Structure formats: structure tokens, C-alpha cells
Length: 516
Image: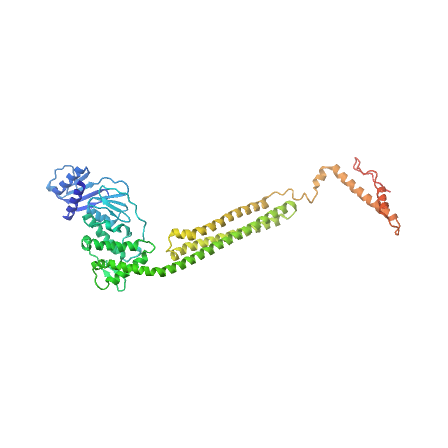
């Protein structure tokens, strides 16, 4: 395939001293002799790739006849455009550079790669192939576990691009695979150390006893030095450490301590570390199983305390809701009573308004105190969750703590809104209502008397008649002897005799009174 031939030619030129630099869209080759430039141009024309040719003076050449006097030449090859989240790399030189720098693409296509490499973060496959890929869930960053004091971090920010999903799917049988294995070994060893010395870049394991490992200055041939077996042991150890984000810190410490105990004081060669990595992994797993019993007891105790705290918090919010309901109900009853008093009695307007304001203020204080308590509990949960319950995933913490608390809080807020609106409405009615008919039941409107004079005169005549009848009864009683009993019949006859002949008022407004 012409693409592979072009990639191999460029890598050979790079090994011979030419400067090869590959970006996302093009490849730049400098320091080319006439023959090398001619061979590259021929392959590009066969592939149909566009290119630009420059001589040693920087002048662009449009003629294919190259002269030795103008050498060395520089070529810039334009790669075909990519579709989607893909990075296409032509040379192993560019592949190694991009592995060191990093790229966000999840699908890498490498021209000289003969087998696909599936990691947790990206898929590397030969040029022209396309397979679907889904990255794994993120895990803990090695930079949060490895101590470094230098200006540049040696530990990778994300370990997933260097972890294989299946350890048996890689064979170190081509140059591109070796490039990736070299980068993976360096990244994983830097991720497993306790500390990286900024002066000499040594990997330190605390132990005891302490262990210090020096990596080779050039990591270009690590794949040939360690072999596939030791590489797979390193992959298994790193996968075990970082497979669970919550337990990564504990497993990292256990493995680092076991590596120091296995290789400490014997050698500073990283080969000795890799030869004992399998035994160190087994020891770390045993220590992890032992620690699970104590960790399990502490975890259960913390979960029980968390359950108790959530129950108490929801109970307090429920009590606050119940208190609010009671206060709102009492306030509504008082408000309706004040409205009834204001309608049916000539009560003081200022007194009724003052009582209503006190009632509304009481309900407002109850609502404010409940709201302040809820806000305080929310702040406490957000402050203490990363410190005490960091071992719980956010989804589980939401189900066990946040959702029950939010449900009780929503009930309080609904009651507060409904009660507050109701009390506010009744307060407005009491203060700004119209009470024109408030005194009609107790006082006769004097204006009605002035507007109907005939009715007024009739009322006066009736009053005079009642006075006359009373005087007649008193006169009859005075004629009876003191020792003489007066029967009911005589009294009734006297009352009948004393009745006036006509009590109907005259047209002039006067009455005919009877005088015995």
C-alpha cells in the first residue's frame, strides 16, 4: 500500500537525520536530498496527495526537475481530511510525538500499525479501518496519587489511554506497536510510584524499606527490554489499581508498599521491579482483602450514622411543617374572626388592624425560621459530604440523603407558600376592606328619620299614647283601697276603660288622647 510505503520512507529519512514533523493535517520533511525528495513526490502523486516543495533558500518549486545545487529540499504533504473524532498519523515519529503530547480524539489511525489496540480511552487501528468505539467511564487521575514537586508533571493526567481492555490482544510484532508500548510502560510506572524526584526523575516507593528506581533516559526501546510477559504483568497491576475510582487510593498505597518490600534494597534497576511486579500484585491483593473487614465495619458504622442523621433532619423539617400548618390554621381562624367582628360590630378599626398585623408577623416568623433551618442543613450536607462520605458515589448519596431531604423540604415550601398567600390576602382584606354596613344592626340611621317625616310623627304619637296609658293605669290603682285586693278581672276592665278611643295620628301629626 502506497501510504505504508510513504510512512516507512519518512521514518527511514528521520532515522538518517532528516527532520520530520507531523501535525493533524500535514507532514513536514526537511533536510531532504534530491533523491529522497523525488521518491516522496512520486508516492504523493500516486496517492493523489497535494504537496508543496521548497528549496534551501525557501523558494517554492513548481518543477519536478530538482537540482543538486538547490538541495536540501523541504516538502510539506497535505493529508486527506478526516471525518469525526479521528486522528490520522502517517509516521511513527509523529505517532510517538502525539502520544507524548496527547490528543482528545478517541479513534487514532496509524499507517504502520498492523493490529488494533483497544484501551479504556481510545482505539488505535491501522490506516483505513473504522470500527465503533465507546470509551470507559473515567477513573482517578494518577496526579492525585503521585507526589511531584517539579514544574512539569511526569505522571499522566489520565491513565486510561495506557491501560488495555484486554491484555491478550497486543503482540509486540511491529514498530508502531512498540512505540505505543514504550510510552505505556513509562506512563504506568510513573503512575504507580509514591513520589517522583524532580532532580533525577527517580521513582520512589515509601516501603519500608524505601525503594528508588531509575528509568532509562531514552524510552524508545523499552518494549524490547521488558518483553510481552512483564508488560502484561504491569498492565494487570495498573488495571487492578485504577479499575475502581473510589478504591484507587487504597489500592495504590498497598501496591506501592508491596513493590518496595519485594524489591527494596536489592536493586535500582527497573527490570528488577518488573520481574517482581506479579508477586507484588498478589501481595497487594491479599492486603486489600484483609483491610476490607475493618473497612467494612467502619463503613457500616458510618452508613448507620448517616441514616440516623437523615432521619433526624427529615423529622425536624416535618415538625417545622406541622408547626407552620398549626400557625397558619390559627391565623386563618383569627383573621376570619376579625372580619366578622368588623362587619357586625362597631369595633375599633385600629385595634383590628393591629391584631391582624401581629398574626401575620407570627406566621412570617414561623416561615422564616423553617427556611433558615433548611438552608443551614443544605450547607452542612454540601460541606461534610466530601469529607465524611466521599466513599459513596454521588448517585447513591443522592438516593440515600438528598432525595429524602428534598422531599420533606418541598412539603414545607408548599405549605409556606399556600399559608403565606392566604394570610397575606386576609390581611389585605382586613386593612383595605369597605365596612359601610357595620353599624346598621345597633343604631337607627338618623338620616332615614329626616327623609320620612310622616314616619317620624307616627313614632312620636305612639310614644305619647304609651305614656297616657301608663298614667291611666296608675290612676286606677290609686282608687283602690289599700286593703282591697284587686282581681285580675277588675284590672283588665280598668285597662279596657282606660284605652283611648282613637290612637291614629291625624294628618297634622297630632293624636286624640283620652283623659279619664
